[in-house]
Length: 132
Length: 132
DNA sequence: ATAAAATGCTACCAGTTTGTAGTATTTAGC
DNA sequence: GCTAAATACTACAAACTGGTAGCATTTTAT
Image (cartoon, rainbow over all chains, first blue to last red; front, side, top):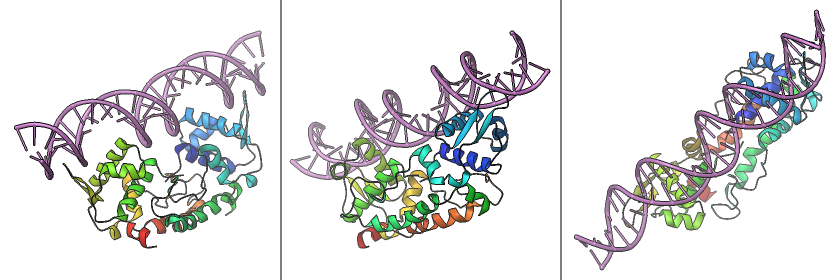
């Protein structure tokens, strides 16, 4: 019950970039700040570009900058792009069928517990992280 | 952001066993009810025995039964045994250090969102699943 | 004793994720 | 034009997870 490394890295990268929202960030510079394995970070950056969160500028003096305003980038979108985000409340543990009676006794407990996290992630933007 | 298969399987196995709390359950019987890949289920069962949730009886007419009362087995314990459960609120995404200022602005959001799930998992026992 | 029925153990396989290496491509500055 | 600095691409390696196979061990029933 945790995020994948790729998701963690993506969130770290984007939240760090958002501190200087309008600047161009190079992979090298991000590496020095975040210490994410350089080549892997490189790949994640191009993935984030393909996903439309940031845009890349190639060549000398190139780098990455936001493709859209950070107050329109929700955390849930980022997670969705990196690892999928299927939190439909089918059953607590993602079972196809419940292990107990049907409907499974866990349903209500699970839905409630999941709701606040879902709500938080899908209502918080990168801009909120700076201002909150 | 989901449970591992092993965690899902473990929860299904134990919650199913708890429906007949005092009986001896064979791997074969559990397989027929739960359709978890047989050999993998076997391995999970021995792991659950090693973790102290159940005990195994070898030989003919052997099987698995609970090693302690199901009203003392919390869901969080099971998850902790199968995939680790480090939800200490160090930082939202499990960072060693925050990506933003310190203390990270996400802390409060994350802790709040996480709290209801944590509370639920660490206050619900296998016995509760039957009675709730 | 022996066979059957059960768990235990070890090794292996496949797919995914994480990480590394090298090369190609693009662009700015001189 | 050439070089340096940057991203893009491709291939591979390592580690982890999920799953399979076979044999070993233990115990009961006959």
